[in-house]
Length: 414
Image (cartoon, rainbow, N blue to C red; front, side):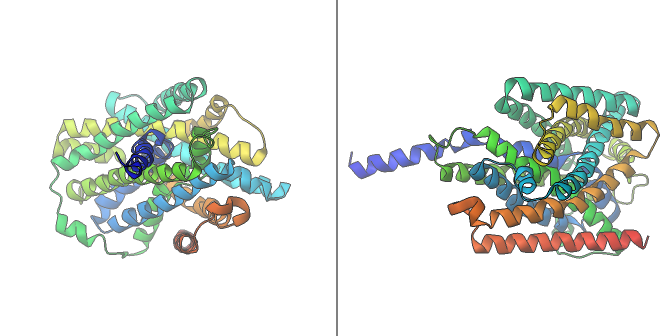
């Protein structure tokens, strides 16, 4: 065999093994299909049909770029995004930044615990406060797997739950009469009044998640720590691009499926503004099997997302407070606000949607530093963003900030 053919095979062989480097992005992707997404997407589809489908498509495209930049930052620098932000802030500014990040983390946890509790109530009739406690305990078990078995085992568990989520939330499309022509018209960006702007911001907050931006830098760094001598950084970045692309495609597909299902089967049905009402409508219109698959997907979503959210909270606290907090301790502390909300009887679906609005307001605080840091040669060296990438990232950031400003104005005006 000619020498050049041998060389080609030698260089091609490692590329076929890139899938073995996958995993971190799929863990981060769980944040994109958490119970907050369910509330926002079902409300959008049931209330406005396919009108806001474009929001999910655009948000998912943004997520691919954002999550890749976060992973690249962690891989190249060996530092997390919160660490790099904290190093550049004075003590007061760092504490203030941590405070807003903690509010975002609390809103995240609220959505995930409430979603899991709702699922247990729908499946087994368990009261919401007890269901929230069960979700918290199971998430502690998942975090113990991370602490004792390491990143790779935790990734496999989360990816397994992600598969259950995908099946549960897409099963209804096999029997729902989707109007594909009308769905295609939903790809044209437009609104239909202030309520749709508020809902779009909620959908954006549920899709582009601040805690996932912070976390992905840590996931990529920890997963590939110590591999730089045997695997060139360029190869790791190539694997990361595929990892992010496939994981975001999966998460985006699930989100779109939820909106299509609601638009096709729940539009105009009374009571579908709540998850419980949507579940009841699914039982009536698509049968108990589809409704049960939906509830199981919701439960898997709550369990996986709350574990990932607690992991993100620990990364944020460690990077900004310079203190390492055990994951299980972090889980126990952040569980309390969600249990209080459930115990006092706040409408769970309303709390879910509101939590996504809060998350939407936190996106710029994570996104602006990320774009800035990845554009600095002093931080990333030869792996600094191309100018075109930075321009697109700035445009994405500006769009998100503009939508959040509109959200604040609409909320203040009632």
